[in-house]
Image (cartoon, rainbow, N blue to C red; front, side):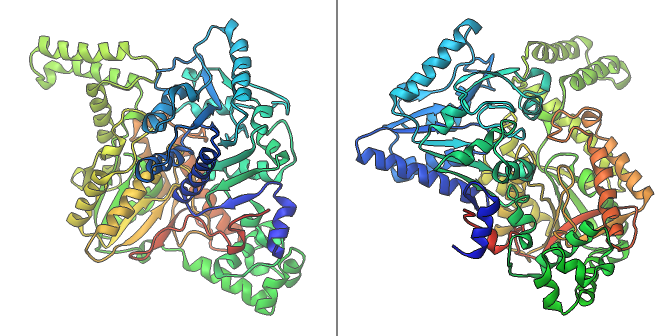
Length: 638
């Protein structure tokens, strides 16, 4: 074992692998499951799988389906037990884990129906305890679980074992934590619609599995992953119990691993291979830790904080401080240093991401006489409350005569049909086609209004309405050839020298990630000169100073105008249907992040700006590295 791996073991109490992206995770974990299925088949035994739901394992299930179809992976000897189910919950509900598993796995492979087990959420309360005991007995009769797949919630739960769950707990009915219900609110179109309880396998049930793999992706999981991997075993974070299992491991993407010590501050663990990027990370970290501007850091500061090898490479603190300071200040680009008279194509996943994430630079680029096209990739229609539609229906009724909308009887009949579909809809049901269209139109009109407030016009907007989004549900289809074809056609029409796209890897619904995938796949097929790719964030996270390659300052007035553009999206104002883990309104997040970036620059001793947007700029053909994970941090840590 290398020195770095030994040091990881000191902090990481469970083996951790960091793989480059979702696809790599899906391939590895699905491969391990497939190997188990084949080995058990050769032994004449069933392969007993414990399965998880949620967005994280979907890629694994898709890979298993591909292996079944293309490689003949046979599931006839497979027995499955799912972790949990909401209570109350009908099996055919759009929110049911029964339905989730059918749609994402069982309907596409040959697992025998009698071998599929999912806890029931539709039983009378007096029958639930017996059902839980029967579930435990079914696992025992199957010979126990061979391979248990887990995700992790922000509360640290595995299954629905919320804070306070005991080491010896078994399958039972449990009340859901407020954090869990808030995170599920988007799936249910409001936290008030999330069931208050669930049936879940217990901690002891999970730990009885012969092998356990926990997977996590995205920056929003980074803090709880660190707690689960490096923290003490405690009932407040059920995932920490996995540290006690002899064959448990964790598989992460770089974003979910971002807070692990080996990634965040690897120099505190031992020797590292210093790169310019890692040097900048370390100097910024030291400046914040000592509360000194970069140019005031001393050689002693470096030596007192695990950075002797770094300062030794430069001879003393002065040259190192100056180098990092100059690299940071070179990233700052006011309007005079931004592109001029270029063809620019901005991709916005939803109809508000452009102004939320890049409203400042969008105005500056317009003022620099660039030819700008803003392409809204999805309609965003599922993020519109029903009451917004009712408000516009009332407007149509009241304005009929003024706008000469035609025959009162015919208009009234149409409006009644739309209202009837809204009245008949249960929480979480898919909207009728007419309501989906009305919600799309609401978002489009807001987008045009916001765009005009930045100095652009309706003629600069394109609404792509990519097919992958058109499910009417929170969960979307995979990016397909039509999505890429539509995106590529626009790139070929505009022939941009610069493309902006969302780099928000923490988008809790995956839409931003999927939209970026559509853009990068289209760019790979584009036969023109490869454009420069600017990646923005802001809705969920912001690029750090060391990750960002361009920092665009804003005055107080420019930030105010940006916020006013965000206000144009009235359907997302006050209470957004999909706020994610951050309960604040988007404009509040933007104000705090843009001002926070500028304030951090000031504390490091750089010029004091009022606010600042951050971007990662990739040259033509270059693709995004999700995170700058040191080489020593990749692979297993224990």
